[in-house]
Image (tube, rainbow, N blue to C red):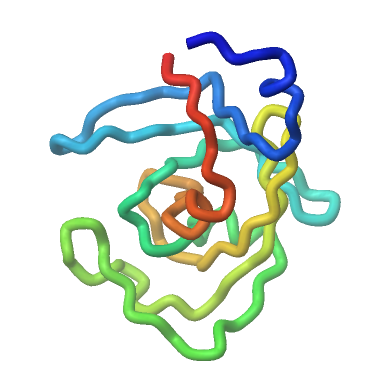
Length: 136
C-alpha cells in the first residue's frame, strides 16, 4: 500500500524504516537504528521495539554515560524468561531524546541490565506514539 505524500510529511505520524526483523524463540523482533541524545552526548545504537515489555528500558552500560535519577521506589525486575535480572531491582531512570530518522522522541527509560539489547521501547512508547511500521 502506497502512502500519500501528505501522510509522509504529517508530523503526527512516526514512520519506522531501515529496520531489521528477525526471530528469537518464536518471537518476531523489530530492531531500529536510533541516536540516544542527552545534553551534548549523542550515542548511535539500536532499539528493540517490544510490545511485550511493560516499560521502556536503557542498558546500564549506556546509562553510565548519562544523567540518571533515583526511582521513587525500587521495582523488581525479571527477564523475559521469568528469571531475576542480574542487577536485581530497578533503582534508576533517565530521560533521553531518541532520534529515529529525523524525528525527535522523548522517552523516560528505566535503567536495567539488558544483556545484548541497548534500548527497549516497550508498550508505553508504542501506545504513546503508535508508529506506522514500514516492514522490509
